[in-house]
Image 1 (cartoon, helix red, strand yellow):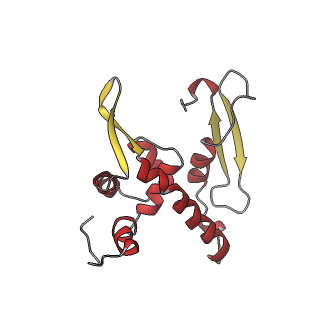
Image 2 (tube, one colour):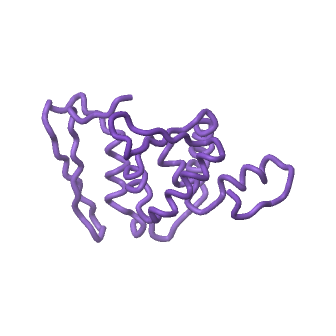
Image 3 (cartoon, rainbow, N blue to C red):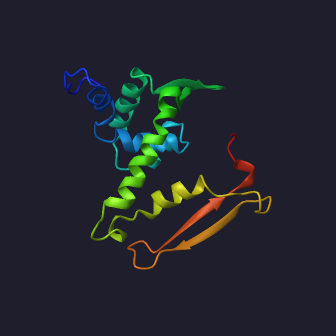
Length: 162
């Protein structure tokens, strides 16, 4: 990540050179949450351009935080997984989230609500075991939101391997 260097022999400065570029922490949040494919990452950071996403993934790979590997059976697609160093950043990402929840206030948090992003995040936390052995659709209605209704599709058959 050669966009700028503090030129300091300080662990905080050296870590900041890697982690404090635009979108990096948000991208790490998505990786820590379990997204591994490029399009999954795009859905988790929808306002990030594909070109910048690709650059940040390459930067994180060069820093030893992310490993890229070809998907079995399809050499045209890659999977991005956190290395040991990347997994250790999970606690940093959670700590930043906890700090933000406690100390960052917004005038209109509902104005920043993106129902699609919320549904994307909810889909990875839904427990499908109690659901029927078929595709289920859950309708979510947001009151006082520009987009008041959306759906979450849960399918036990399509559950990802752990």
